Amino acid sequence: MMIRPHRTQPLWMAYLLHRLSGLGLALFLPAHFYLLALALNEPQRLDDYLRFADNPLVKIAEFGLVFLLAVHAFGGLRLLALEFLPWSPRQKTLAASAVAAAFLVAGTFFLQAV
Amino acid sequence: MQEMDVSVWRGDAGGGGLEQFKVPAQESQTILDVVAWIQQYADPTLSYRYACRVGMCGSCAMMVNGVPRWTCRTHVNKVLKDNAITIAPLRNLPVIKDLATDMDPFFDKWVAAGGVHHPGKSRDDAIEILDPATPARVETDTGIECINCSVCYAACDTVANNADFLGPAALQRAWTLYLDPKDADPSAILDAVSGRGGCHNCHSQGSCTLYCPNELNPMKAIAGLKRVTAAAFFKGGR
Image 1: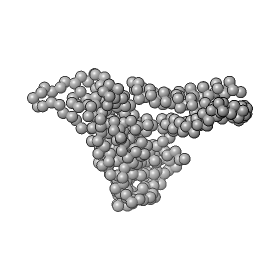
Image 2: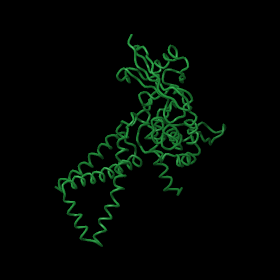
Image 3: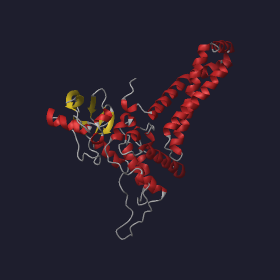
Image 4: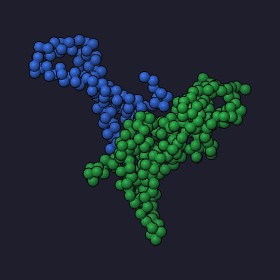
């Protein structure tokens, strides 16, 4: 996808990140709920999947998932603040803070997982 | 004399493409100077629009290297890359010919956004005294120096993806009118800005505010409209 010149600015990137993380989570959640539902009917298959999840590569993928969830949550809080709190001129700082907080959360998860 | 490579979009509503020109570089040259040089010395059939040349009238905005700018106040040395410039008509508006766009949709939306004064007094009433220090007036002052150049409208991806969206300039105008204590029907403005193409379509990408040549902040104005329309919804059940 081509980023056109007028889009190379921080708040447009924050918009893109929010949209892509939302789409990513929407694709992931049905699979997530399906696997959790196996606990009720097919616990053996769930255990197989949980063993698969101990694979280091899967841990890295989980880091990505936690990052998507955190960046979407913090980004959503940023948008709520933008729209419902008195105006702040520090929108770029807030967007960068949302990404930084998401890295902190995802990084902490990763260190716990390995 | 050193020459620059200038690519200018030529065409009309049916389509077109870039045409190359060699333009002599001069000191303190603006993009509008470059376009005028081409029209006067290279190709007199080049169509473009300008009036005041000093950043007041809002007529000369174009896409320069893919970014919307007021060309009369954009110096060549600020945007020249590898001795080349690309100049195209404003985005999100129909092209009439070459660099001149049809700005009717842009101005029609000013009216659609409730951007007309709603009078409530007659000539027999005393003139209302406005205190310039009230918070509403201080906020209004940050949004009234718009020159209608359509740079924000061309920068906005929500406009590009939703033909009904009123756009940053019209919504900012509605916001300043809503804050005006002389306006007798602020709820009419809220109705006008909360329909299908209203303020809630805005994705807060902030390109309007970044590229506004007068350094206004339509993103802030639209956030203000979102706030008051949400408050009106919860208070009045509308």
